[in-house]
View 1 (cartoon, rainbow, N blue to C red):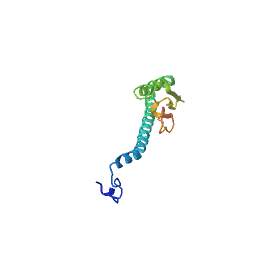
View 2: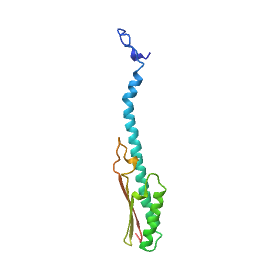
View 3: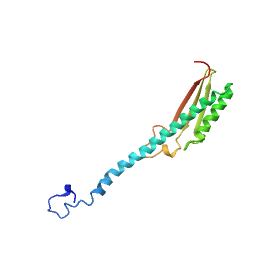
View 4: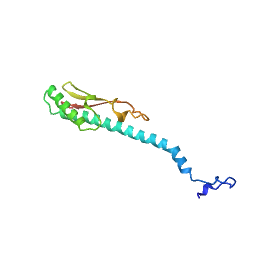
Length: 143
């Protein structure tokens, strides 16, 4: 018998500690489940945010090889969509990609609407936002 369970012996079951573990589990399990859902939801959001940023980075890097603005835009789109295609959980139909090129600086804007993604819609812990927007810029001429 556990040393803390010794109570006055007046009632017969007063010193019985067999159910304490079940009661402790019932009190702590809901809290642990909420933490677990929070970790899964937050981790999924961070992973998707990283993929969106990486697609913008790859698009901007690939655009450096282009000579004309339309060629740079095509290279950026191809590289960004290629990065998104290798990711998990991001449907390319939910991604909007825009390339701004003024001849001196090129910026790739990637926006992901994750409102239909089940990992971002967990009922216990909602994501910070379901729309993830990232951008990457490169200088085309000089510094």
